[in-house]
Amino acid sequence: MAKLNIPWSNLNSERDIINALVWNRWILQVLGIWPLVYSNTTAIEKILATISFALCWSGISFLLIPMVIFMLSERTTLNDKIKMLGPLSYVLVSMLKYFFLVMHHKGIRQCIRVLSVDWRAVQQQDYRKIMIKNVAKSHVLCKFCIVFMYCAGLCFYTVMPFLTHTTIDEQNNTVKPIPYPGFDIIFDFHITSVYIFVFCAQWISGMVLFKVTTAVCCLAAMFVAHACGQVEIVTARIENIVKSAQSSHIKQHMAIIVKHHMQTLRFSVSIDSILREICLVEIVGTTLTICTLEYYCITEWNNNDSIAILTYFFLLISFVFNVFMLCYIGEQLTNQCSKVGFASYKIEWYHLPGKVALDLTLIIRISQHPVKITAGKIIDLSFARFGSIIFVHRSPEILLPEPLYATSIPTS
Figure 1 (tube, one colour):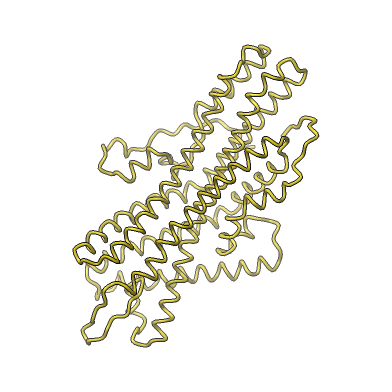
Figure 2 (cartoon, rainbow, N blue to C red; figure 1 turned 180 degrees about the vertical axis):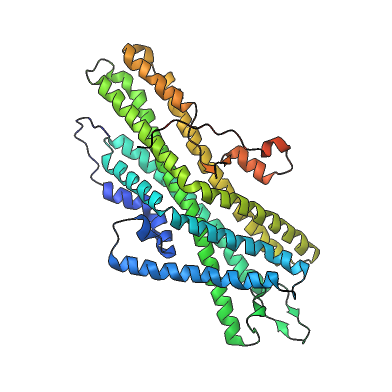
């Protein structure tokens, strides 16, 4: 980015970068992805990440393989297969999200590099405050996502198995509670040590699944919050350009604004390219999971199992909130990008030199088609899309994909 001769510099840039990355660093380290997306890691961190990566995939496979065997077994009834459909779809969706996170590690690393450069290149204290404010917003979203997912998860993995009604099998033996059913096809739960091993393994594997879900949300929140902060800085520069209308540096100011705006748009497009497959899997998988959870609530209502109803209800709320957060993030980015054009028109542009004022038309034109976070380039993530996902009884035309406008943004 071109720079003016401004004496102020961000001496706390490294601390600001660490603060911006703190939640994603913690989550991605557990998943073993952090060394892939961040270059400044030690050899010990890389070794620990490799071990963690192998353990996470082993945990997901430990859940997936017995569940698939249970679904394909002739011993299981149709009702048992429907009961397993929700957990199986969630495991498959989490595995796909994990895979796409690893596949897009180069794009994530590039976005983190741009984020770090922006923190080091910030030129005014006011601009730094704007970036800190947006980082605080992303931290709030991350905390909400973690609280919702883990509270519902602890209910499912800990509370429901022990407080729900116990059953007796054909041999008059008490069936011990387990979060995911169907593992008795492979393991003998009458042996206490085997039961404890399976239960603990399911619990740990479930935490890995929740880590993947929170990783996606926290990553999206961090990148979009940073993009929104950069757009706010561009807007602030535009609003201040009139004050320098008589200055000899007016053209340099405009060049900085245009260049900064284009860099922010490229960063936003990179975010969409990283998240589009993940969001598509998330939207489709979460929609299926929400439908199955509603079915489970109805069936448990008929069985008068209040503990199961509350657990499934908490899970339902957490998944609904997960979709809402992705749509909220997409809505914020779209709205913020649109505000640049409005700010360009709102200022006293008629006091600017003629050629400089005409340069604002480029910014206004680009802002008419803001960057959107999409799910597989099929649907955009917005409040309207959230309503069409949750309230499926609405008119069919709302469910159709909205037209996506491609902004001509150079990639290099």
